[in-house]
Length: 427
View (spheres, one colour):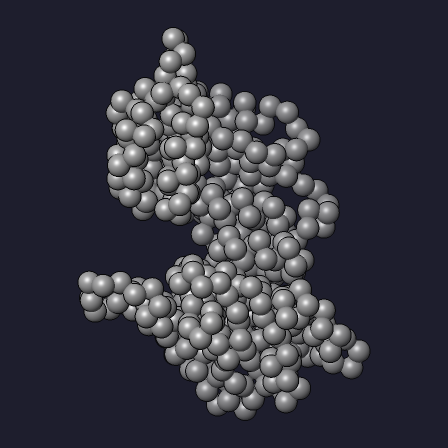
């Protein structure tokens, strides 16, 4: 049964005499110790008392996944993706069991579920699996018994082996489960009280957004905002899952509403620019004097794609004689050395004179669906940055965003400049 089919099937069960369903997801900092776990149980108790059947998706305790990864690296020089997933998925199992026991200690019936027990079927890409299928029926049967379902996030099942969904994968687990059980909404609890116009640590005047369109959140998540995993936003948009970003550190008896992620049509007044995102983990690669001939771009980018290295911000500058071109593009900082090694190996096939790279760069992006109907939005930014003496290395644009690559030393100045330029400062 696909997610969509499970949603329609279980949605019927949640209508009529049945209770509405709610998915609550709690990240690592929200369950960092037993006091935090008990606080999570209070949030769950509140929603259950409000009349919901509740499924809770939990991450590993803060720092636990990093510890498990380090153990894997220390265990053997031979890397086994299958066994890696067995180890790193165990952190969520611990949290799920502890929260279920805590709820039962408060006289709330609860049961923990691992990904393979539901099951959450995924692709077989260990460490970066994608959810393919969820049967919501087992959770629905638990609701019928009056149980809170406590689900270990981040993990799934491919064939007969455990898989994991990549860092932040518990967000994806939560949204997918919400779709599968026909939940009224999905609340993602984090260590912040919503989605802000930019990072408040960089711009103290940043504002919390009451609502943000799915498309805008997708761009912000992919361009550096760390609030939600990109895949979770994609699933929420595809399956129309009403999703809130909220703080687990609110008083459980007086929680704040957070930020609602919804369709563009559900936002009455849409600003031109909704937020400013930035990503420091970027690296720039320039290939000098690349032969200007058909197929050369494929020769450069296909080997990188086959190695699962994402490429962004491609800029091509042809020489005066038309015989050669300089090709500049960005890759994730963590993939910089691997990308250089691949390109160096294929230098003779590509036909370039030299390779130059830089790690001291940052990508700054402005996002807003209002850009669709307004001209000159990016041009204003280019002038404002120039007035601050900030040089732009590369530019990319789309319907609802533009990004610039600049020297890392100017990152905070650029973010503050654009945040003020588009009237996003608190008043």
